[in-house]
Length: 148
Image (cartoon, rainbow, N blue to C red; front, top):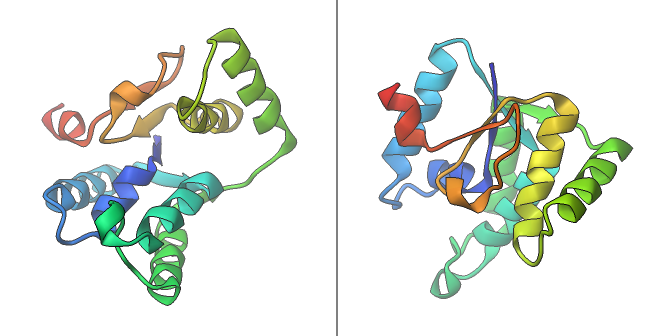
């Protein structure tokens, strides 16, 4: 099965000082050892860049662009990269209209649109409550993946 990895999963993998680093690593290792596949999209990598290059005093990692480039290349090599296409916008637009989405939740709904277009059934995230419930999509916290 394919699991879309939310930005916060990649951030916890990359940030060795995070209290959730070990859980993120263990979860990804478990997921891959079971024959599943982690997938990423450009949006997740863009959001990763924003947080990785933001100063630590404003909840970032404080990395240089060079450090961030290296990590993004590692993610692209490790996980399957979903291509963008014209169907993603149309799906996103329908979701925000149908579910009356406003503000920051728009970004999370776009990830769901990517999942629908690419038939990805699972989203792995540390923030499952950030996402609306949709048929055929299961939102999973890393801890829940390990306990099932």
